[in-house]
Amino acid sequence: MRGKLVAGNWKMNGNLASNQALLQALIPAISPIAGVKYAVCAPFPYLGQVQQLLRGSCIEWGAQDLCQFDHGAYTGGVSAAMLADFNCRYAIVGHSERRSVFGETDEIVALKFAAAIQAGLTPILCVGESLSERESGVTEAVVARQINAVMVHSGVAALGRAVVAYEPVWAIGTGKTATPEQARAVHAFIRRSVAARDEAIAAALPILYGGSVKAANAAQLFSIPDIDGGLIGGASLNAEEFIAICRCAQPAA
Ligand code: PEP
Image (cartoon, rainbow, N blue to C red; front, top):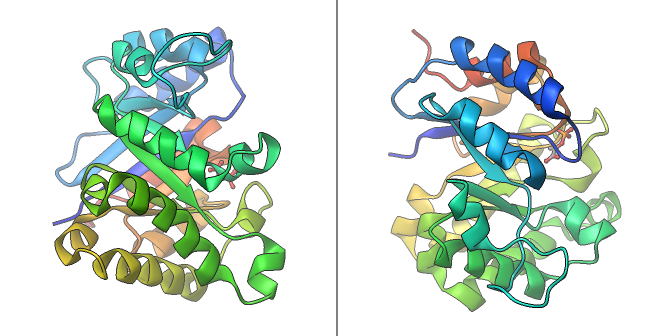
């Protein structure tokens, strides 16, 4: 049975003082509940701080990216093994900001995904279409291409140790959320695409929705059968909002 996961993506935000205040607000407010996981993905320099503060809590942590290479002359790179040293559980790969601002191709994303798996991290693979792609009716083709790149490189079985996040690019940080029907249709498509290669892996694969999730829309989105939680950007920086979103992932009492 798939559980739910709510993961915060802090992006390039925060500092030592604000991270501490945020985590100290989250820790007592988020309770462990069977079948629900919580995580925050912090900027690299703060992983040590996050590890120290979250140790012993029910909130796991991760990074927002990683280098596809193991070690060596890759100035600025941070390897999967380095993330594992900080007990990261997750590494986001292929976020649309990495793809569009830093020019990451499907091939690079597939290498990063493989590097994360190799180090025992759980990659959160982001996929999603731009507004023009949606308007030209190629949403499914784009998402299929992005997922296939990973399945071809690492094999479908690797998705058994991963999370997929469907993040329509036009909904990220814009305040526009996919309608429940738009999200449902793409999530179902992703699951069908993986099922075409392996039904059991598809059935167990957590598929998160990301794109302007807030406390006000999380419950509706998380109630859709193929939506297994959320990847939360802006709202994860606000303790009250993030706590409320986490609670929306919990089963009704
Ligand atoms: C994200 O950064 O992955 C994201 C979904 O951002 P936001 O929630 O701010 O749209």
